[in-house]
Image (spheres, rainbow, N blue to C red):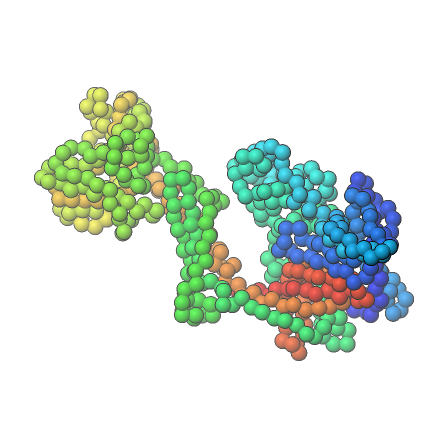
Length: 521
């Protein structure tokens, strides 16, 4: 179908009062003057606003105001387009005798969400559908919502309002948080005031909604402004992933000589950092029966204090920073120095040993070459017995040792995770005892892999050079988060643009100033 908006037209405007209660159009509002403006911006919370001038009087009570464009084409045909539905507000009026004039500041209906908050704790339990919950919140203030379907569920309970565990300060913030977690765009409103929830789509994947082509039927102005963010594009991304017990940093680097934005090409590192306290699909559960092994503190030696104590007296133990730690996310270990006999460390007041259960101890160690190291998963303090110790010879390099013991009886008052040497010195890192016959990875391993993946994903996004084009056109039915093609070869602007912002001027041609972006990977 041909684009009817390539034809010249004359524009006039209608302003209509819309019932807040029923949504029905009531009557025309006569005293609003042409020349106002409507702004739509995908990067602002309210999405759309309007500024209108009136003479004599303006009063629609608490109802809404709807704006229509009436286009009359040169062949006599006509077209009527709704431009938006707003909540109008008059802050001041100029009075000169009997003459009155003022400005209407009008807001998109998302303001109903922005102006409202929860009276008490608003709890959304784990397993709830994220988008369905966002719909409920918008409907609670009387808005009509149209949402793309989504099956994504909330992973953990979320609280808004009193006792909130997030940054949502109002209902619009809460909706935005839920939609972002579901992979949706920020909420927007359509021309009739309905709230729209749409999945986020990469600009490259957006369908084309309109074309702007130079020539006889060109409906855009030739003067444009183009800018780029090339100097700000990073080539290194850090992702810090932290839980209560562990922290890791994922890193992705663009060092390809074939990339125009890489560290090699620009001659420097440009770093951008992100922080997360959770990442999808990462199991951070720690199966270690020893508490605080990552920090390796020497103290009371109690599990409740997350510390270790010295065992045997033929030397010393101390917490040390391990710059070459072989265990991801663990930077501290325990240095054991023997003065001529056995000395080591352990942790008291651990859980009981269960009969017919396998227990596996594993630890990284580096020490005096040829010295003997010893590990023992537990010791019964009341009965003065435990499993047979496992000895090994130190190589002078990092080595991981482990052994499994099958418990043949129950033990109650137990100390865990014994590590010894009988001479020389050694550093032990990541002491771990767990149920089962296999030494499993530390949670930090999974966290590190996830952080590295996320960093690589973000680097691919961050390496996009954004070219911003500002141009003006007569009216076309396009709006933010739509894609258009620009074929302005004379000006060197050719390609697919994603509309970000628009300002419509309510004048003879309903001229729109567009801000659009092109992305280059």
